[in-house]
Length: 175
Image (cartoon, rainbow, N blue to C red; front, side):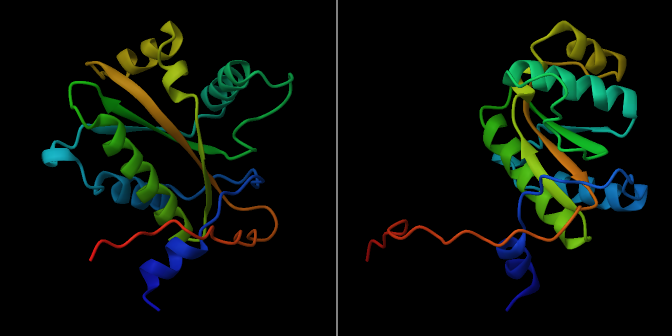
């Protein structure tokens, strides 16, 4: 089987990470793969904010926890030390789809490099808040960006989960 297809079939969402930060070289490769995602009319309107600063990562986790309504102490990023935040430029009509493709590329690239990942939602709600808008401004990011998702990345703790069975009746051919 083709290595790319095998990786797409084997990759799983990881919910337990070791505290060790991934190598910067690996994060850079993952980010580059994300930037090569297809985009509507080639606009490339999605951006990635890579958070490896533990203090910022923990503040982001707490904001996400509050939005999600979980009990204090829960980490919605499951201990992943690196968070790649994908945001879409709302001026692009396809920003949500484009950002979603970036997320897929990030997760598949992480798996290909021996790292675990998981898509965590609530980036939209976070980046509607002044604190996180200020972060974008501090980074020199201007424009109307909406949070698409967080790709939590790190070394997997434990074994790769088994894939669930695929549901039947999801493909229809028109001949």
